[in-house]
Length: 331
Ligand SMILES: Nc1nc2c(c(=O)[nH]1)N[C@H]1C(S)=C(S)[C@@H](COP(=O)(O)O)O[C@H]1N2
Ligand SMILES: [Mo]
Image (cartoon, rainbow, N blue to C red):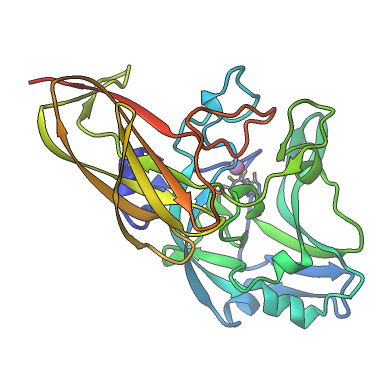
């Protein structure tokens, strides 16, 4: 997502970032079925009409790829080389997953739900369907949706048409697109996308920890004008209002600070765009001629902040150092 698109509370659909491991699968909403099975009392399946006739709710959700910031790491981990732009906010409409699970009757010996997408391909030499799991408790949270609309229209093919899981607050890999099956399992799911990747590891042998909820991050809309293709920034001297967004999946963002050449001051916060969405911030700056480094950082109600420098891990996940923008102020 181009960072100037942070000017919108809700990211226009075509500007929302995309992460697609393999190919967008062919999907026909009229024949699509979601099968709920495994360790449940009453396995069943739902058509898109069935899903649409269930109670519907809309949540405005900021989603971020767990690999956002990866390209700033040295050595650069293998993976999508995101700088800062793997974010977006959308109004997602769907039916709460919880009620569907209650209808199926998840058995008391079930520990996780496995979500399967219709897409498949190779990763790490393993041919696989895209699958991720959640514990029963996380899957039962009221905000978790089986989403069929984005910004008031059916999902676009690239965002999971006709149906995706939407897990507010978690990094994007959790929100399985092109959802075809939900299976309750009695042992922890160890599929590729759950165990071989999306872990914070220092090396291949490090068991590490799971990547789960989004760490706080603030980003700034780069001020002034840029040059093509080097993308340096230029602006005239005088007053300018720096603006951006901050979010966290672990608590609400309660503070955003802006650094001008390493001197930090509080930004003014706007109301969040939704319970699970980013909030705008602004900071007036009197730009003086010369070279400057602008930066920003967010902290949340759970006490999480952002490091000044990137912290390396093998997969380059959950990397949330402060953003630094070099600007030249000149007449
Ligand atoms: N079935 C399926 N679901 C998926 C993916 C995928 O490749 N296949 N990518 C995941 C990742 S890594 C992210 S960050 C989000 C991106 O969602 P978006 O493309 O709608 O922004 O979808 C997730 N869900
Ligand atoms: Mo992602």
